[in-house]
Every structure is written in structure tokens, then in C-alpha cells.
Length: 113
Length: 116
Image (cartoon, rainbow over all chains, first blue to last red; front, side):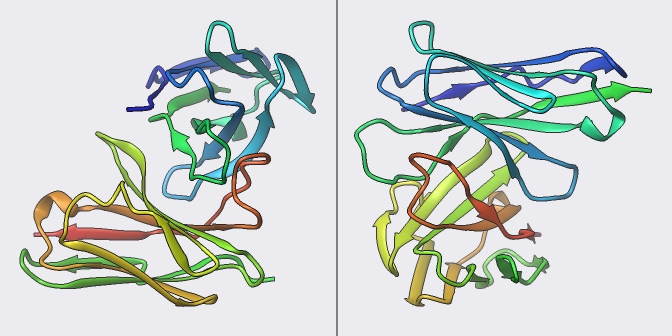
């Protein structure tokens, strides 16, 4: 059973601070990793993807990947109240092909004004 | 361009009844996924299609669940008979070229199912 683990939270961060979200995965062969954001009552939407070890930056968002530790993280700089949402970590399975993503249960992030 | 369209948005039914959820993917997308989301289990992949052909249905919980994609613009997920534990939000998502590289799944707004 391939698993993706996240702390469910809630994670409370003051406005303007850095929010750090973490994710671990069990499939050592996984190559592609994704962060989705889901507002309450809405559908998930893709924020970022990463498949190389290290950091990948996109605006206020930075994804970090450490395949040796099977660890993915998302940093949100200058957090805004509009960032309050559930953040889902997702992993594409190993073995090639185009299988569906395996999602973690998500971390509920609250940005306090 | 219209996004993924799902219907109904909300469905309340009684145990034992048949439920049919519908999905229209984004035009031109060749992959269609059905996911189920609950608080306890999160977002679970049920089945996915490539060019209208079911590729992996290992996530379908049991024989009460079935899915079809008769053409590139329409898919159904059917539960017969329904049970209270089937209560969840069912999402349909489509993508172009699968999810391996970019992970870009375009989700519909979901169908919230309540089985009494």
C-alpha cells in the first residue's frame, strides 16, 4: 500500500510569517511530487510540482524535495489570510505510465490576520 | 473553456437506492479520474480511464461500484445498492497526457453524496 503522510493540523501561522508544510511518502521509487490547495467546500487545484532533489521556487511558494529521506515540503513566504486552506501532498507512483496520483489527507493551514 | 462538469452537485438518497454520478471532462483531455473524498480517508482514487478505456479500477471499493466512459465527453459512476458508508464527495478530474510529469489534474466541483 503506497502511502502519503501529512500532519492534519490545524497549523496556525501569523500573517506575514513563513508557513511550512511537510509530507512523507512510502514509495521509494516515486519520481514526481505535487502540492494541491483546497479551499473549504471547493475542489483541489495544483500549486506546484517538483521531481528533482532540492528547491523549486514559484513566487511566494517553495517546494523542497529530499528523495533519500522520502520527504517533500512546501514553504509559503509572507503568508496571507487568503492562503488559509487545506494543502494536499500528492505523489505519482513509480513504474512509469500515467497512473493517478496518491494524495495525503492534507494539512489544514490557518493564517491569522 | 468550460472546466470539468459534474452532476448532480448534491444527492441525498436512502440506503439501497441506485446512485448515478455524471462527469463531462475538459474537451481534448485524454485521461479521466474518479476520486472520493472523506474526512477519514482523504482523497482516494477509485478508477481512471485513458481514451475512454478503464486502466485501473483497483480503487473501486466493491462490486456495488461501477464506472463507464462511453465516449470522450461523458463518464458515469454508479453505486448500486448505496450504503451510508458511501457518503462522501465524489470528484471527477481530467488531464492531458496523464499525471506523471506535471500532476495537472483539473477537478470538477464534486458531487456530495449523502446516503441515509
